[in-house]
Image (cartoon, rainbow, N blue to C red; front, side):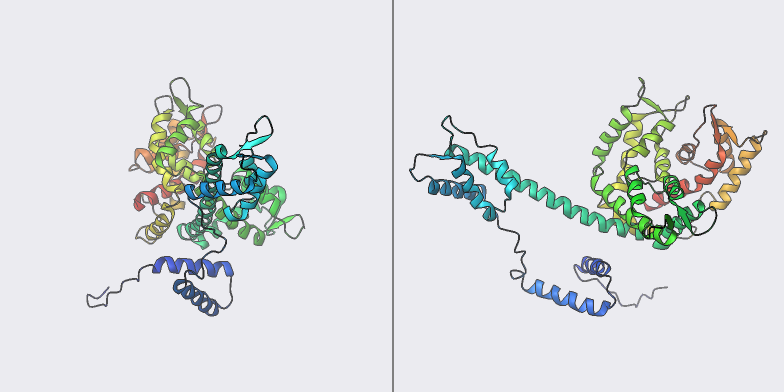
Length: 443
């Protein structure tokens, strides 16, 4: 219990960001002597703080304003125009901009873009006074592209750090490695600690890690570092963790970052497959979400389906669903939200009663659901109609909310006869409901 007489402390301004930056550099350097590294890092930081001009980025050239740029280009054209007739041939014209490359921070491709806009007269000359405003516009568009690419690169770096931080906070390293170990061990049927490439490919495709087809191909091309044709657990875990970080960071950068963008994305994604009544079956929606490459895991996809409202025929209005789930998905893909979510999730997982959903832990929920399913499975077929599956779920968890029930029912994918292999539902229900419970507690 905290004493009311305890001394109160406040953090210096900028301290959290400073600590985050230092931590990032320590992890990048992988230094063995953190004290020496820290001394050198902060000594350099003090120099940069006290001498900003000396440490300014020498490669970043000060850009001319549009007016200055127009005046500079006009001046150089006039110098090149020896007879003062207001025109230059193409070679002279190009020489002007080649001479400006370093000054204006342009490269050969940029000069080509400028030259592409230079129209010749019938005699093969170019009237430069008419072209100067066009040249200014082209150079400024090049600058805008450079700024955009720099911003994107910075955003990717930031997203990479956020992704690593989110994975290690939102899912502690030990938990992540335990999950990867479980995936590996299930695929390692003979228990020899290694997988053939075929076993590894199957393992990754069936794992609930949200990997896309391209990411699986990258994994397959990177494993088996020692060339023995086998993938060991020691190879598997660090590779998967690295790819998970890359995968999350790419999804943070490329995914829509505003709720309206996401709504439009889902409207287009689902609308293209909807019937004449603007409806889709839940199995179709799950398949489309998996194909969307938003970096969502299987658990997250089925949890998102809690927002679906089925009609009597098991169909869902895609417009209603798009609007409902946009906000839910936004918190998973928005860059700015990741750090807050990571910290909030830590708090949730340390709270009293965490790990129990509707009174069950993972094993308890599985056993309770299987017990109810088997009561209705008189022929011991291992499958039931969807209505029976729903009845069993509500019997095992009488307090389950309609949205949570809908999420679990999205796991109930029927076969051609309309029956559901209920063991799959029982095996994954806890993960989906626990994920939803975490999100609700964080909110």
